[in-house]
Amino acid sequence: MKKKAAQLAADYAGAVVFLLALWEVASLCLNKPYFPGPLESFLAFGREFAKGLWAHLLVSTARVVASLAAALVPAAVLGMILGRVERLDRYAAPLIYLTYPIPKIIFLPLVITLLGLGDISKIFLISVIVFFQILVTARDASRQVNRSMVDSVLSLGASEFQIYLHVIYPACLPKILTALRISLGTAIAVLFFSETIASRGGFGGIGYHLMEAWARLEWDVMFAGIIAMGFMGFTLYLFLEWLERRFCPWEFM
Image (cartoon, rainbow, N blue to C red; front, top):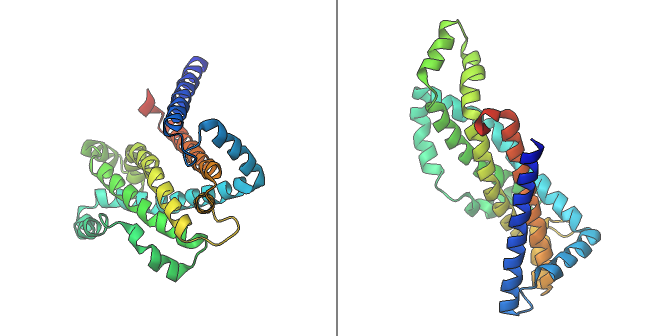
């Protein structure tokens, strides 16, 4: 286990070195003030973090986590039910097919008008987008559960709830967690857009901080915000991967 962890750490370290080298080469080739190198950017990140970037980072992270948590349970439960109850899915499928492809970000002005510029509007919009991604994955996973597994549990006198708890849920969980990891990138992208368009002053989040730096032409500070958002996404992704390894160890054997 320790050897595997050491190898994983070495792989990540190699990836970081490669990306930093690529960044440095691009900065040297462009030789423009709006594209500073990694050293200058990380120094700015250290300064900005001490001056309050940590608070923006905390606010943005809380918004993403709250959005994913708000979408996960209802989307997973409804998806597993729709995948098993064909009659209910027949009525729900047209609604899903009609609404899922619509880019929900276009409703941002309406959501802001209804819910204001605070956290609620951002969390609501991100949750709606992530909800559909998890819902479709959970429904498809529930459909693919082996019928013989369900029949064997039924033969032992299991109730409908026990079928979901002991058969459907374990079978769908790996794909649901994978969908959650994929949805993380979407959630952060929507968060950035919403924070740049709909934020008050103060600690409005990383997107707000980044765009404020861009407006002032403080390029190193802007890249400090980019580093902060990348760090947030990477940390949350690792956490979700840990959850998948923790609750679905058979997927990694």
